[in-house]
Image (cartoon, rainbow, N blue to C red; front, side, top):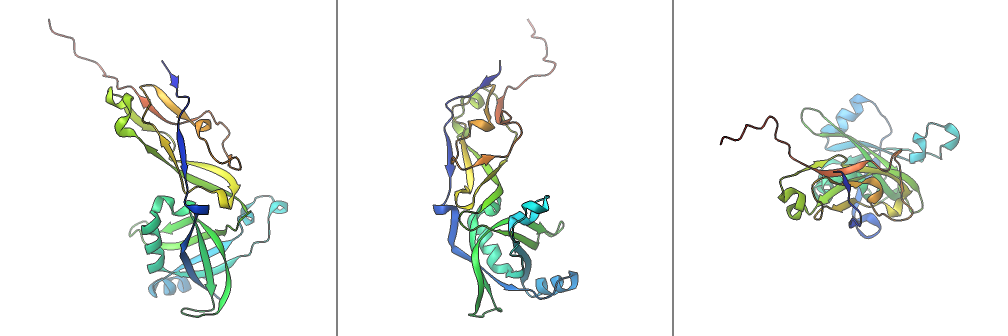
Length: 237
């Protein structure tokens, strides 16, 4: 019998203001673009990047905001260090400080602000980062973001102890909310789920300013499914 788990305890974990102030991404402008220029930058230990206002992606031109578009390069070594620190799954749900300087090692600051990574382009064979895409994420800016969902309490789950198995249906949820309220991740406690229990999207408790972008909030995030034995052998008497 299908059961929906109510009274589910969910936790939204976020670092203070969800901004890693101790990680300030250093970048310099790119005057030229193109595959050859990008290859040269990568050979010099830099990663081509771009930052703009997310409103630039709006399909309706009347809804687009001023782009503040900047074509940049970042230091590969620093980006690797940051990703290792915050962990890759949460990199694109974490805000960072960005400083754009006149050149590598320059003390001249051209522009600064808070940004949110939204895309990492990697080489399919080597896995090396080829390009980074950021959007401006200053306080008060409305953004759309995919927030990773992390399930905890599996070791104590009654349904699993009874022989069921955990089925993850969604690994992230898409929200629209002010940049300062973006959680780095959403933790869902499944330690009390029994067989046939499931967690639905609308069971998740988040900040009131966060709007879930889903056409059907009754869709499940996960469930504890029963284990069926196909074609069981007859019991010998």
